[in-house]
Length: 435
Image 1 (cartoon, helix red, strand yellow):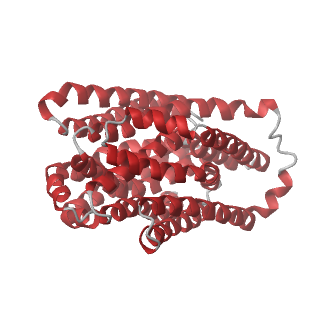
Image 2 (image 1 turned 120 degrees about the vertical axis):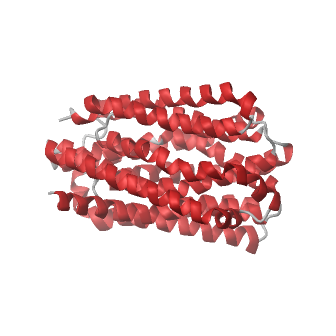
Image 3 (image 1 turned 135 degrees about the vertical axis):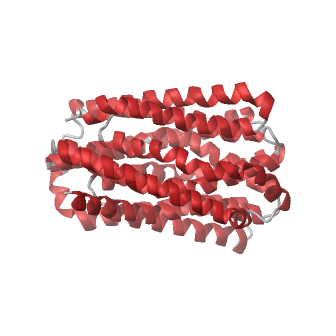
């Protein structure tokens, strides 16, 4: 059983990790392209512009998470009709919300940029980036659903293919438009829009390639019946609150860093992009956790559930150790890869110890996320994130007057520790007793 579960974990995790490698490369490429445009201001413009989309899109993380958990449990029950219904529900919600985002783009951008302490030069570039990239919203939200559904169906290969197509297209198109066509920041944004729609077409092709036979369940799925939406919206509501809490941490981190000037904002942006390299590796095992935990709960197989959780934590800890060693060995090279600005590289050096320590601090929390998603434990995930937000801001505001921007990193570490402790405490009721 142990060997079989290890094989299942790796079969699910490796495609997600391969896709995950390309995801931070997109953000790193955007930052690196901006860095080659000549100043810290360009990096800051990308950082603030990207943060605007974090504020928008992270709120809709429930589309992927909820779809993955519910679909995985339906897969465990072998309920084809419920699998199809969950995917259709997610797509309907995604398209409805994407229309709302397009309609509110101007007041939203004006409000957030008014609240941001960034410089006028950074704000101008952020606006250019935002008002082009917003037109990718229908594709982006629909792709959340596609990713979640493929993971729930235990098919991370399809999700991998889709993500690789999106992310490589994004990098290639952004470089071509920014430099080849001389569009600068606008080219980076337009490249992202084009790549998202290419990815959506790829997702539809994969859907028909793998699951054409399930199309017979579309008409009878009951997707428009009122009672069929209860579980979806209950779970989505809790996950929405969780997403808002995550935004308060991650966008708060960027906005608070901005008040220390463009150079330290660029440092914080680069450091966070580098940390995503680790996050997307460990997320491969988190996605495996979503798929397997959901499947075993749906199949009412507690023995396999407990064994898989134990093995998932062993794998995630190994990724944490390997990532720490990678950052220690490659720190200066990684910084130079991200920017050629000497002032930014010099300013980043006092913060490198955080780069070394974050993988070990966060691997437990990231792994719990995947497990809780598979268990559809939305309420517990919500509560854990509320605790972590409190830990982040409390730590920062208490220590900031004494430690300056270093307090921001202490707050970020505190939020990870608080999240891990809360999830560990809640797991017995919401995961282990789910069967």
